[in-house]
Image 1: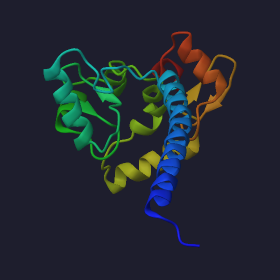
Image 2: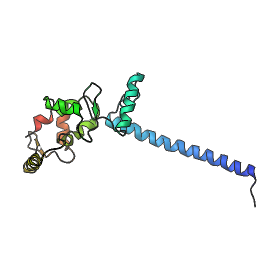
Image 3: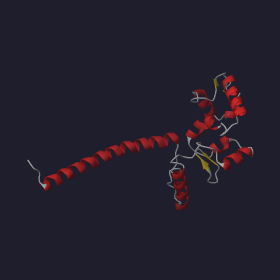
Image 4: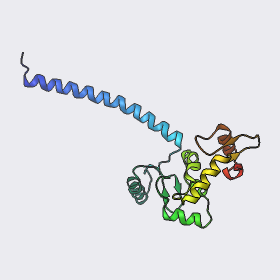
Length: 178
């Protein structure tokens, strides 16, 4: 039996209503996952571009677009940020050459993810072959971090629980390095 125009329009309206309800249900799940991620990583409204100052939000939004939506892992407090991926920017290289430590810049970023990435980010961007061999020999010959109880971590893989607890209690990676 052939359907009339009105019947087809009613079907379309019913399907659109069902689609809207499904979209709302899915959005609730997405919002919950986003809230969990924000809480887990300690993401601030400023990092998401929700600042009160329009000039600052425009700057953050443009930087977010240019860094392929990656949140900054290292910042110098002057508006310079680095996601921890790719070559180190000039401002960071110059500051490290001047004697600053990479941890100094991670401290200005508020996410706990930054602190979890530090051992991987400490590597130099382009070591020479000679330096590369020295790094390999050093990392395979002995652990890089030890605590008073004798527990060790090479700096590779996820941080062990004892190391996380030591850092939370106020110790630094430099204090734990062997």
